[in-house]
Each structure stands twice: as C-alpha cells, then as structure tokens.
Image 1 (cartoon, rainbow, N blue to C red):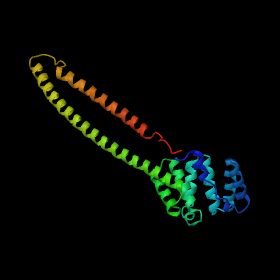
Image 2 (image 1 turned 120 degrees about the vertical axis):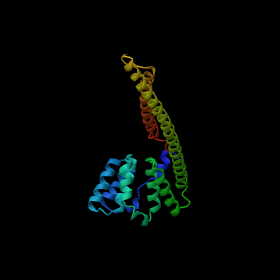
Image 3 (image 1 turned 90 degrees about the horizontal axis):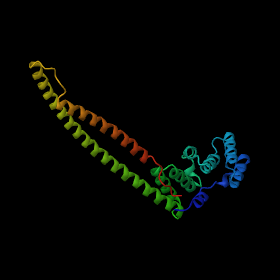
Image 4 (image 1 turned 180 degrees about the vertical axis):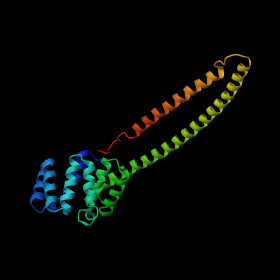
Amino acid sequence: MRKCLVILLSFCCVSVFAQKGDLRRGNRQFRKGDYPQADLSYRKALVQDTTSVAAVYNLANTLYREKDMENARKMLDGVKESAPAEAFASDYYFNLGDVAIAQEDWQAAVDAFKQCLLRTPGDLAAKENYIYARNKWMEQQNQDQQGGGDNNQNQDQNQDQNQQDQDQNQQDQDQDRQDQGQDRQNGQEPQISPQQAQQMLQAIQQKERETQEKVDQKKAAAMKSRQKEKNW
C-alpha cells in the first residue's frame, strides 16, 4: 500500500466548489494546513447554506486531516444521496473508503472503493485500497468463523464435564446419606466422609474452572478489539 503522505494527498478538497466567502477562505486555510481554521470556515459556510454539498464535503476532508474519523464519516454520510450525482463522485467514494479503512470497517471500505472504481476504473490508488480492504474483510470473516467454532467446541466440552460432575456429585450425596443413616442407627454422630470431602473438593475445582473461563473470555475479547495494522 502507499505511504501516508501519498494517500492523504489523494484525499483532497474539491476547490472547484469554492464559490465565495467562507468556502474560499476555508480552501486557502486547508491548503496551508491550518485545519482548525478551515474547519471553522466551512462550518460558517454551512450556516449560510445548509444544503451546500461543497461545504459538507470539504469539512469532511478537514475532519479527516484532524483524525476525527467518526464525524468525517457522518459528514460524508450526510451527502450520500446528492454527492454520487456530482462530478466528483469518484473522489467522494474514495474518501469514504479511506475513512472506513481508518475505522477498520472493512465491509464499508470494500463497498466504497468498488463504487469509486466503477466510475474511474483506472484509479490505481483505489484498486490498491480495494484489494487491501477486501483482504482485511476476508481475514475478519475467517477469524469470526474460527472463533465461533472454537467457542461452540468449548461450550460442548464444558457441558459434558459439568454433567459428569453433577452425576458424580449425586452419587456421592446418595452414598453420604446412606452412611449418615447407618451412623445414627449405631448411635454415632455423622462425620465428614471421604465422599463428602471429595464433593467439596470438586465444588471448589468447578468454581475455579468457572473463574478461569471468565478470565480467558475477557482476555480473548481484549485481543479481538485490539487495533489492526492499517495500510498506511
């Protein structure tokens, strides 16, 4: 994949839509790298015209540079009905794909770059990002399927073990009751039998297994949520 600088250069503002006032000012600030001020200028433009596709689109680009991916995507989603009909539809989908990659939303990234390539089949950067996102999405699918299979197998094994423990505990309890009844008939106070001691030990071991399973599940969830390596 291309390095950060090259991909970010592809993620650019559409200056052709900078028609007046705050839009022009925002574009100048954007080109200078003054993204906080560009952010403010584009928002002012939106106050004047809430339907301005240019202001929404360029603000999304600015938010991308500010690494505010969540709001950048919200802005792009806000013009998803109108932007695809504009002359810059290919750039719109490219940028939407870049944001999806940054969020590791691989399915959305695949869909966005596919739409970009339908409009500009010769876009090499879009092809590379499409392949990258598709591979990541396939890896994610395989991991989810494998994880689901492992969980089902572990659940089956745990259920079998629990049933065996319950059966053994029931047998021990029945034997204990018989022993205690015999002791009372003989005028002796019932004592803790070997079976009772074994039952107590098994209960402790079962509790330890349950605690360990909870710890393992938390560790697995933490590993799964860890950020994956990005293409830039």
